[in-house]
Image 1 (cartoon, rainbow, N blue to C red):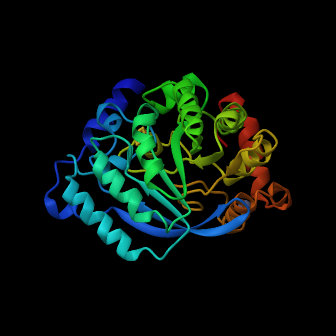
Image 2 (image 1 turned 180 degrees about the vertical axis):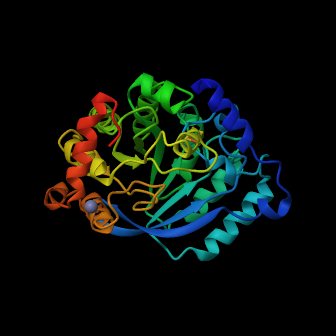
Length: 340
Ligand code: SF4
Ligand SMILES: [Zn+2]
C-alpha cells in the first residue's frame, strides 16, 4: 500500500460517529503538570476540550496523530462547550500557567466558536499569568487573536505543530496540511501581535532512522528558533489508529530512544538563540513511548525534565547507562539498512 492510500485508509477508519449530548458535555481530560515561566517553576493546568477535532484529521491526518478518537464527530454547541468549561473551572486551583487543547485548533470556528473562545479566555483572565492554546497556522490571524489578547490580562502563548522545517519530512512523512514556511510565518504573525509563539518539533517521524531524526530535529531547532519564543521537542509515542501504529504492529517502527532526545537537546541547546528549548516526553519509558533499556529510563526522563525546566543542558552530559552503547550500535548500523 502506498503511504498516501495508507494515510487515507487509516484516517477513514478512525473517524468517530457523531456523539450524543452526554459525551459533548464532558471534556476529554484535565491534569496539572510541572512547567516554568522564565526561570520560575510553576504548576500548569492542562485542559483537553472535546470538540469536532482537527479538520485535517478527517481528510488525511498526520501520520503520528490519533487525537481524532477524542473528538465528537460533529461540532460542539456553545452550550456544550460552556458546560465543559464550567466543569473545568470548578477544578481550577489558580495555577499560573493554563494550557488548553482541543485535539485540533482552538482558533478554528468549527471546533470552538468565537463567543466560546472569548468566554474561556475571560474565565482565566486575572487568575492565570499565561494561557496557551494550539492551532494550525491558517487560523493564527489577527482578527481571531486580537479579541483574545484584549480579553486576557496575562500573556497568551500560541502553540503551532511545526514538527519539522524540512518540507519533505513535513509533507511526505508527517503528512501535515501546510509547508513549514506557513508555520514560520504564523510564528512571526503571532509575535508581531505581541503574543508568545511556541512550536512543537517531532522527534522520529516514520520513515526516518534514529540518526536522521535527531539530525532533522536539530536542524529544525536552528531554523525555527528565530520565529518562536519556545521550542518543544516531542518524541513520537504510538497512538491508536495512526500510520505509525500500523507500521509498529508490522515491526517497521520503533519509538525513539531517550538517548536521541538527550542528543537532540544537547545539540539543539547551542542553536536555539534566545528561544526556550524543552522536552516533556509523553509515555516516556513505556513500550509505545520513547524509551531506553528500562533500567535507566526514569533517571533519563527526570534529567530531561529538569534540564527543560531550568534550561540547564549540562545536566544531560552526566547521564550514562550500558544501553547507551547499544543505541550507538543501532545508529552505526542504520546506514547499512541493518536492524540491531
Ligand atoms: S497533528 Fe495536528 S494537524 Fe495533524 S491531524 Fe493531528 S491535530 Fe490535525
Ligand atoms: Zn539504559
